[in-house]
Length: 73
Image (tube, rainbow, N blue to C red; front, side, top):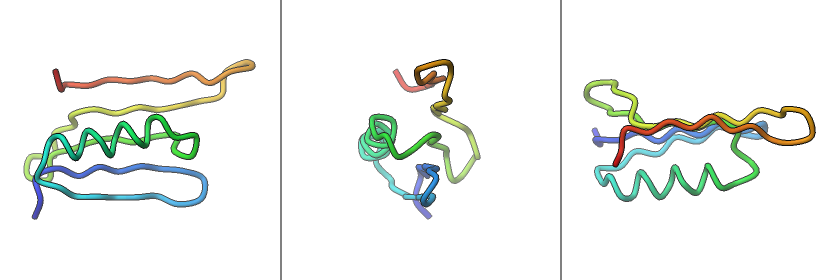
């Protein structure tokens, strides 16, 4: 089992990727966050279940509101 799980959610499909690299997990997460396809994603620890970061996009008024939280420095 890999250390980190990156999950992304979109209207067309959901994606899950597992890696042992913090850098790779962060890059995948950032790609999802910058994409117009994914409305939600998170990185979690496969061993402890800890949540390391997440984002959630919603339509608000004439724009997009994004909630973002991270435990990474």
